[in-house]
Structure formats: structure tokens, C-alpha cells
Figure 1 (cartoon, rainbow, N blue to C red):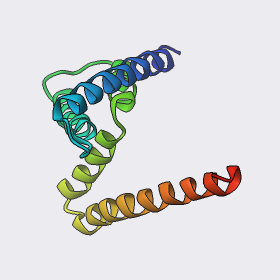
Figure 2 (figure 1 turned 180 degrees about the vertical axis):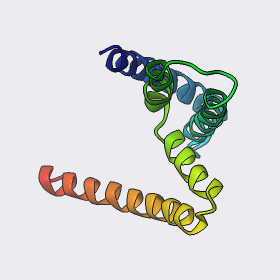
Figure 3 (figure 1 turned 120 degrees about the vertical axis):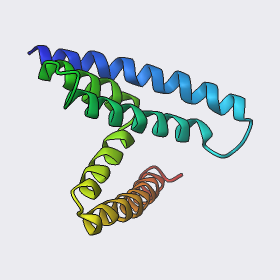
Length: 127
């Protein structure tokens, strides 16, 4: 039960952090390029890489706290960090084809899924 509470609380905190940091960076960038989202995604990737290495070596912590930090806070902050970690782990395991397939499929299918969802809503609501 503690694990679920830590995930929920961490998710809320991560979402608020994403909203604040993404908005601040985007405002500062004064550009149409989604710099705020890029910064959040890169920061999330750095943090999940750092924490994963730390938690498998020098900083042994209880599973529920590890999951609360990675799935909860970083999951709320950006799921892109999980995507980055999973792709890295495939490459680190010398499964380069699977790592490349994960990148290509995630990006291509994600884009197509957003397009389909957007078009479906336009059709559904007559927009």
C-alpha cells in the first residue's frame, strides 16, 4: 500500500514540477519551438539515469521508495525518461536493433496515434 501512495504523491509532485518548469522555460525561450518540453524530457532522462545507477550501486534504498521516485515523481514529470532508460538498457545489453526499433516505433507510432486521436475528435465533435 505504501508503494501506491508514494507513486500517487510522487506523480502529483512530478506533474506540478513539469508544469512549472516547462512553462518557465517556454516563456523564457520566447519561441514556438517546444523548448520547455525538451528541457523537461532531457532533465527527466538525466535524473532517471543517475538514480537508476545510484540505486543499483552505492545507494541501496527500499523498493517502494525507488519506485516512488522513478515511477511516481519522474513518471509524473515525464514518461519520456522511462522511454530513454528502457532504450539505454537495450543498447547497454548490446540489443542495438531493439533499441533503434524502440526509438523509431515510439516516435512514429506516437505521432500517428496523436494524429489519429486528433482527427477522431475533429470528426466526433465536428470541429
